[in-house]
Length: 116
Image 1 (cartoon, rainbow, N blue to C red):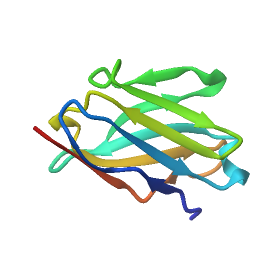
Image 2: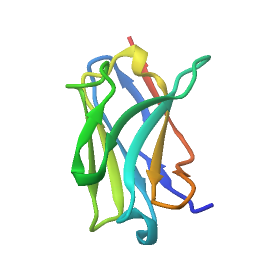
Image 3: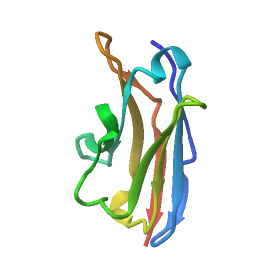
């Protein structure tokens, strides 16, 4: 499995900000749509945000207006800027790349903890 390397997680206070990054090999990044998911304790993994074909962007309703997904094809890296964080955003965050005709690629997961 191709490694996707996540970084940028950690601890933030409510109302604070964090930016997650996910670097991928160039051989898969440019042809892929990019997505972020998260998994909170005792909950199922949920989709958070996507950049789809044609660069259309979608967000989970509870993060819309606070989170921004982006990608930099020159660096083969995707980002999730998280502002106005809330305790309910606490979760392990995973990046995901979907390349046509291949199995999904996943990051290793990175912890985000938001204190009240």
